[in-house]
Length: 113
Ligand SMILES: [Zn+2]
Image (spheres, helix red, strand yellow):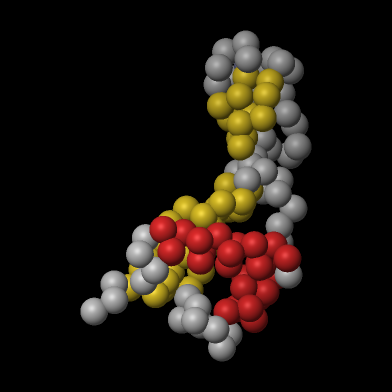
């Protein structure tokens, strides 16, 4: 629940920055490694927005794949089957490139008449 609450805080803060119109859609990007369960997050969000000013809000949740960057050949690749070695050159000298984030990707607001 606390993750959903912080998502809604972020939505409200972002909407305020854009003049406070009614938010109709929000996009979220959730990394594969973030440990967030998308279905339970979606459920919590729907429960939290019911009967609030955000009741009409729809969420579009996208999963961000787990990726790493190879320090030897600079390839950014998706980690499959939890094998972290570079898929291009096989090097084990790699660093995290993505997949643990949780962020807003977009908001759609309804302009006040
Ligand atoms: Zn490589």
